[in-house]
Length: 259
Length: 259
Image (cartoon, rainbow over all chains, first blue to last red; front, side):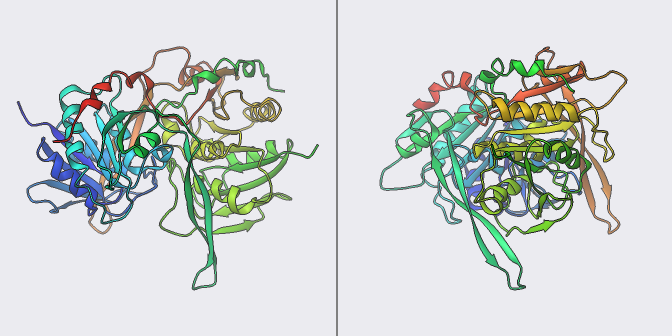
């Protein structure tokens, strides 16, 4: 049987150590093609580039591996990978990351890493977004890598049942070794923002986004809870944002007539 | 009772006719504050600006209405509105749009309009994203406006039950008058992309995203179906992307041990 073709992308840019870690794992499981942003794209969410053209450059970053850097967002990278770069080949699997920083809880909607994986899943490609809960550039991926390999291997062999998208978060190395994997739901946790206010060298005021992550979820079945217990969290994801519980209570709205 | 404070934002930029239509409606229902991007931000999804500072300018666009243009994304605008511009006042309601173009089906995840409304809802502010299914700059919002007013009025009076976020799409004017409102679910519909390939004046290749919207959903309870029947679609939304049906089938993953 032919080796599976695995697309690798991320949002930290093609030179990120997290991408390198993912490449080292994935190349042992299949043929790898890398299509990643040419600059950091953290926080890009599901942004796409509509008002400008995109550029692609073939780069020789990993020996023997076909790799491209693109001028757009993570989602643009996946679209280009599917429709331009590999259009005559079938992408069997997509992995995004390993992100430098957590994408648990509500982070998923801001995350370029997860949006890239979601975009691939919308194209029918089974996908995993991987994140390590350490946002530093020199984060240590060594403890994570065997699990990353096992999860990709599981997906290639079995698929993911009723979903084709996983949000995987991995605790950063600590005194407590990883205990294993928990399948869980997205925690009800969010960012509480503040802005650093200042004046630039040209005398203009600016506001720079910062904030702290707050969990308002005390359930023991969430991704945030699993990470706190030193487990890897695996959240199966979808892309239907409908709140079904609200459909019936909102039915009076259908009686509204315009004046 | 004090007038409610209504935040207005969008993704087409502060000069968009759709924003003007929304302001004209909302100012009859409460005190209005506008915080909108200083440039078009379509397709920005839930992008936020992390690696650069943001700028705010007070602008006199609508007579007697407090208005600001911001350098960031639609989600940045909402964060700035909440945490910088109106920090001593309570925002009672947020409306985003009226977008020039549909945000039905999967468009919600690419849409800056909907992401801005979702960001406000994450802050606990009841929010509606409005879109007209006409992407042209001179789109006609006149038939939409009475319904927009009625929906905001409903939300201010009753709230939205178990959700605080609505995705409202309105058919553009046609020979068939609007029939009313349907509360529905997000259709399983997506973009099938193509890239226009070309060479720029400097001899460099480029790829420009385009595509066609395809519904793979033949249910009669979806937003796309409602729009096709000349109804306004109202989808109650959430921000939990967990695919709950996949939790149990994925439980074998918990048995994975790292090598």
